[in-house]
Image 1 (tube, rainbow, N blue to C red):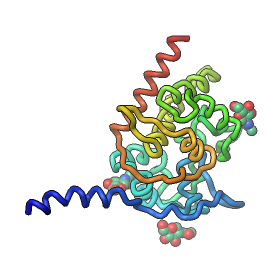
Image 2 (image 1 turned 30 degrees about the horizontal axis):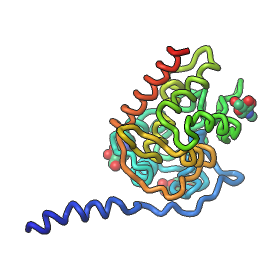
Image 3 (image 1 turned 45 degrees about the vertical axis):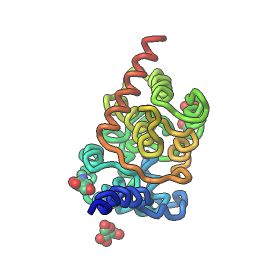
Length: 237
Ligand SMILES: *[C@@H]1O[C@H](CO)[C@@H](O)[C@H](O)[C@H]1NC(C)=O
Ligand SMILES: *[C@@H]1O[C@H](CO)[C@@H](O)[C@H](O)[C@H]1NC(C)=O
Ligand SMILES: *[C@@H]1O[C@H](CO)[C@@H](O)[C@H](O)[C@H]1NC(C)=O
């Protein structure tokens, strides 16, 4: 009895540490494949973790995949999925997400804004923006909350006004990538530059990625930190 009580937590740890999925061969979108302006959704499709052609994506399967693969806890998935994505229905094509307004927004880190007179935003990465974003890593090795804040302040300074959605998603998206593909050091989340840019720029899972769970509280904490840093950076100007 004493032994089993002692061993159980050790066994649980071993099980949790194993990767919960096989990432599959990475293959970028080909002609006719549907893609979103969202690097994370495109990455899942490129690894065949959701339909590689990006079409007929099952909402329920996406929900599961965001949990099993990306590590998002259920309340966080509910918060993100309920609303614009759920409105698309039980199945949808990734390109549906590019409809400007509800979900897709201006001033993103590596995508261009919707063109004047167009309903759908571009879904290809602007590699010039990737290079610019890279320059915001102060030590060239990792992105901290402060580095992300500096990049957001710079991008937002090009706009006279932005929707609330653009402002909150602009902070929330890099925060999610940091939580999923970075790690916590001394109470602060950081993400290797290489991991951030592999995800955002190549739409590919970073090498050696192992799923770890994170939730609403982590997202709330990190977005608050980035937002506070943005205010401090603006105040110091
Ligand atoms: C779409 O996917 C569902 C399963 O999620 C499947 O039952 C259905 O046949 C698919 N439809 C098409 C047109 O491929
Ligand atoms: C996503 O899946 C979880 C179970 O992992 C479930 O509790 C939740 O209701 C699902 N969310 C949505 C928006 O369907
Ligand atoms: C890509 O981003 C750069 C820097 O913001 C911008 O100058 C350029 O016009 C963008 N490219 C396209 C095709 O929009």
